[in-house]
Length: 393
Image 1 (cartoon, rainbow, N blue to C red):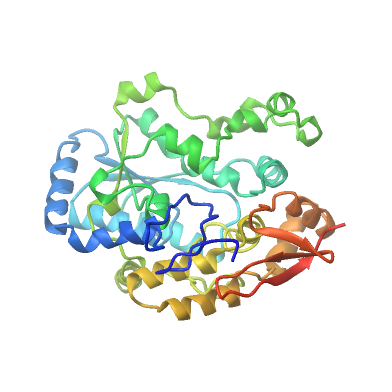
Image 2 (cartoon, rainbow, N blue to C red; image 1 turned 90 degrees about the vertical axis):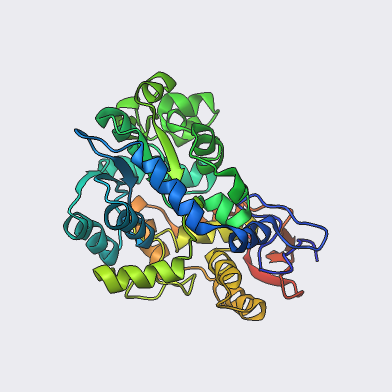
């Protein structure tokens, strides 16, 4: 088998989230997850209380919470408001592709938590152009979303002088074990640029930036003023306010299945009412209808796995699914080309499916994919290679 897979979960070595394997063939994501059973969570909770107490304000918000309206956003806000008694400012980047259930959950947050809520919605024409550019430039039509999520809250924190930001889980740590729970890692501009944005920044999407990248054929007419929402504050601006971002998953035992049910019971939070084509979970990524669809299909095209693998790994580690059951989920969901999702996005950005497929093929990782008889072929976790469609063009 060309690609190594974890012996405990179903992650491949060639993954979007960097991970390593130990001498027993277990991935770093699983090993870091095992640390949770040895942590004194009561002590961690006390640390969180002491830390947030330092930021309570007589005249300003106590904390800022980046929220999408998802299950994690509700849980973060629940902890801040109901458990810690903080007055938060909620901040949302809105990428224009919310599912109806996601939109419903988002706008109810102000009501159910009695919080002030700032929502930043870039112009639709700009977002359509960013969808096309992100896809063509680096195989991710949702790059604008990653940028907005990790930029807009910091901009607002600086402008409103709210130094403490409460994030949910550290995704790269949760999935791939990038850090240990003992590191108590915090948000950094380095993580934003090098990992969340994969080395690109807003300048690269302007016409001038595309010239510098040697990709003038991709120009969409975007300028710096079109992308004000994407421009990260300077070090001096951040230092003046003392902005820092902490992860709630370092202080509470984070388990999304449990948190989701709690948010449903307490606040009537709604999961997706229509099943996704590429994963069995209906509680994730309701803030962008393409996140579980063609955005995730691009991950399969690049690395040979998708969100079915991501979610199955989480459930194996949580003890609610066996590895054998997880492999069946991988078989069922990872290869699916999401038809209804693709048709909507192609119309949104005015692109043909043939053009889409041809661009997709340029991003395939040759450590995973090979061509046999005009078909794309890869090895699989169950030990059998398979064909997954013709080479475009």
